[in-house]
Image (cartoon, rainbow over all chains, first blue to last red; front, side, top):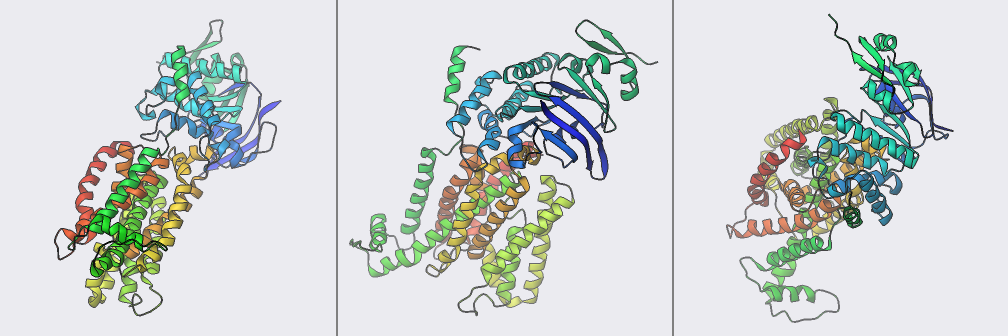
Length: 255
Length: 354
């Protein structure tokens, strides 16, 4: 069963042809990491799936046709790379915004909405922050709050755009392990963009390499993360080791 | 995680308008109204004034003990003026709050976006063209002010988006539009020297009433504007996370913004057309509510109506009593107290918006 199916997806923004015929199948419960050099179209790909930018071609979610704006938020939740944090808004209010696709913009928060929000806060260890403002939290705490907002959407497909940016190594692991746990417990499907290639190889089953708006490699980490592929598409000189858990990408000094 | 913290989450509460704050808003409006009815050159006892008003209700007959002239002062002069002040203040405050939410800009208010300048030009044209009085049944000034306000929003919006979609460019384009329209207005005034005094007193704002005419004029706009804006209060909270994220939550930012701004412009134009340019209410009141009660539009918008109404009724009281027997223009009073507050808001919110 396909959770996400992209066929010949093209996106043009301000005259720039950013995605050039992307095909991608993601199975239900799968975790796919999208990697690629700067400007390859990784973020645009996630925005196209979440309906934020208009795309040509077909994007089918959950084996159905492309959802309308009203229902999209129940099928896809996105954690943006740099979410807008409105000043003064409490963690509770911010997380409850994620219930909007279920209750519409005019209805109030039902007890059911509050239950789901408190469940998300509990799962992400945010209970103690419920009454704090989001803006007052640290980067790692904020990342969890934004993740909580996405979770209460109860969408089966979760898109993560650079979820580890601006986090230290420990928090990077925390967030990715958290996502992995949620995937296993709640049966979510994950599509994430990641800059750190080693991390991309550690979490999730499959890696899709995007370059120049096209999928140039698609497979298990050990097949995609090779010295030749990385050199060709990232213009980087690396050595790829294997420590038993997956490929380890080491930059080498060019003299 | 401990079991206690799991237990804590049971009391998760979303921001909402509490009964306590609603009661505070209603009480402050009532107190302001009673002061507005009783304080003045003719000092009238509060109980007597209330009895006099009760007397006007069908089927109620209580003896207020007021003389005929005092009774007329209460029912025919002060009461319509207090009601008009409340409607205008409530409208200015809620439209200011709505603009701030719709544009995600804490400094947005009808004046900064050129709405009032547009309404001012429209009203000036109407007064200069004598459509204001001679037409008998139909007073064109509010209509002209309304059209001018909408044109100003359209111009500021278009110009702001041409220069990029940031709130900064929007404020700048609002300043440009306001300057442009003010220049047009000045030109019209130069060509029509005879109406300068009338237009000038309109610009400074006044709540002088002729019976209930102004109240009946503004009431439909007040009702419609408040209804639409309050209906969209949650949508405005969603808009706070930015257009793209709001869209991913199923809310169309352009649609919400268009509807709210249209409704707010309608209300602001109506308020300005009957009361002139009363400044700072749209900034002071919503920000004071945010500072004290919280930032959610579910709280800010309804409380702004109540506190805005109370503020303008009190400002009008000051305007007509501070230099008796003359009257200060109410715009002078609101700006005198509003300007220092505005600077404070500017200082505290600058870090968050730019």
